[in-house]
Length: 119
Length: 110
Image (cartoon, rainbow over all chains, first blue to last red; front, side, top):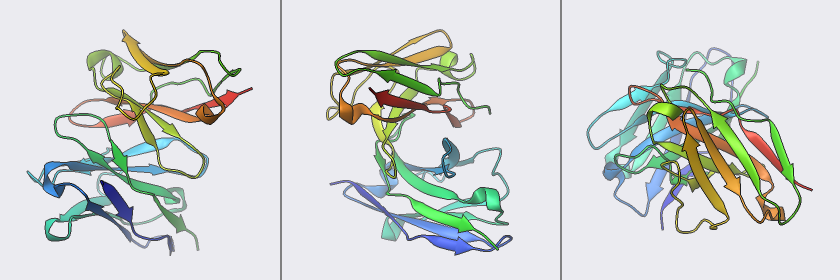
């Protein structure tokens, strides 16, 4: 069955970077894009961007462009999201989600990774 | 890209029908049929309920339906049940391969 398993919670200081992993199983990893979505405590979902390891396409939200980097390790069927220059407003649960080809929706989601930014 | 606008809360009694709206612009909701809806229970990951405006994944109850008119998409829940109490988010393709979520709606079953 399709599964996306994310790395564990992180606590970081302002200015630091964090890297979250998302290991996929149960499907052909390179045939689907991976979207990243975050949710600050008590707040709405916020779209961060996506990466397609099959063709190398990447898109970042305007808000995070320049601070966020998506990568993949196709041999490990794993996607990564790295966010740098962390600030308190980056405290959130970060989700990865599978995006079927030529579609605009996410059908399977990871369990989420809590990132806390605090001095 | 501004968030799509949803009502903060909607409530209904068991068995009733409720509708959640999702208002965007001609650049997102009105310009594309790539609108999806997600259900999120507290502390859980979102779950896909509707995709491409009105299509339902096979595992989702047929009590959930979607539609769109102009710049506003809607999610209707019929025969409201206690388990439907959750937050609901719409999402739309925006432009240049970017996406946007709605502000979210808390559904309460009275």
